Length: 330
Ligand code: UFG
Image (cartoon, rainbow, N blue to C red; front, top):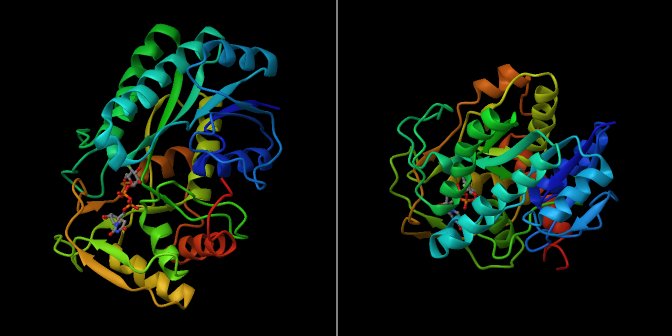
């Protein structure tokens, strides 16, 4: 049985991936600082280390004591707006600490890493759907902090034989369908959780940031990908490294997008609730459209999304929000 260290395993995408790793016969081990993650009761009972990815001694001890075969590295700050206010925090937490983490892993003999990257690495895309080979000119420090790590990988590969796969997520969304595990950020800035909070009456209305974009209904288009499909992409990426498929960058998205108005309309249909909207000016830094060209991951990993229709995403997220209207207890 292969033992996989999951940094950030108590976070939104990490926790869903830990569950899937167990289901697929891996032995996950979590390293999480719990700064933004949550020790939810829905998180499976697996070895858990509360600590920092930059703690080299801790990382080397975990690798040696538990016999880590590969790492899935989620731990990071991920709020675009916060990154604009505090770029140094993002370069420290996401870039500097990841570099220390990977050095410790390499020195302890771990050579396989799956990395959480982001569509924010592309910045304002020149073409949509966006292929992996598109220019990467991030327009916020969050995207830049992740892109810098991607840029370090080929050098680490050459020098130390690092085998790496970087997964550029588009808009992660959705939850377990029984509502036991889902998305909880503080502060929450993401569209779908905020719409569902509005449906629950936790906030008065949902703001639509920009109605004058060059899109059919004037609102931004995003490629929403169910967190379970995202989790599956990590399992397939691990298997690909084991098979020697080779290192590289992969988009994880469905290849089609939905506008803000469409997401609100679908949420009204699924929740049966009135969801008042307030039309607002554009939010700085939002590209009109972010949609993945997803051919590479489909053909290389034989991956395809199974839960990423907008209905399934909203249904599962609604199950989570109804059960946990205030999110996780802490
Ligand atoms: N939006 C609103 N109202 C809100 C919140 C969001 O209209 O109250 C709009 C945004 O303007 C955007 C869309 O809904 O057009 C989606 O916004 P999110 O904040 O949910 O997601 P983003 O597309 O801004 O960002 C997400 C992740 C980032 C990642 C990026 C990559 O949060 O971490 O996708 O595509 F970098």
